[in-house]
Amino acid sequence: MSHGRDFWTHGWRPYRLGVMPLDAFWTALIVLDALVVGLLLTGRRRSGPLLALTIMALDVAANSYALFAMSVAHFAGKLVMQAAFFGFVVGSITFIWPRPETSA
Image (tube, rainbow, N blue to C red; front, side, top):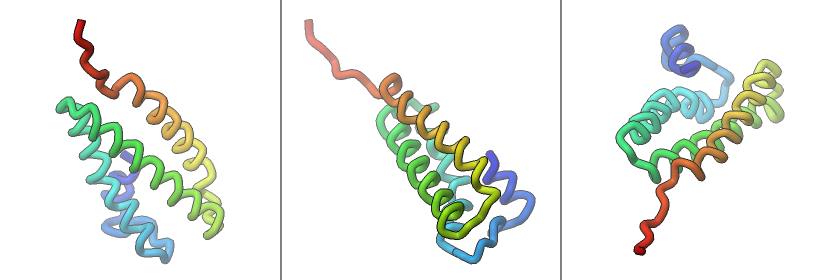
């Protein structure tokens, strides 16, 4: 949601940190996040969680890079929240992932 709000407010390149791959990734999250929601709502219990896990790992890595390598201090609070949500995604996969059918 925050990426969508930033895009709506500031346009195609809302962050302008000077690193185009990061800006492109953060803008692409608008579509990628919606894709995860769509996959989960349509019952894709493998591809949805795997894509969510991949996106969150990349997002935490990108924001860690922005915070530590680029010294973008206002990412500190966001990174803590994202790391917590990443933990939620990792933990919830065990509940969402389909169980193998057992024959009795």
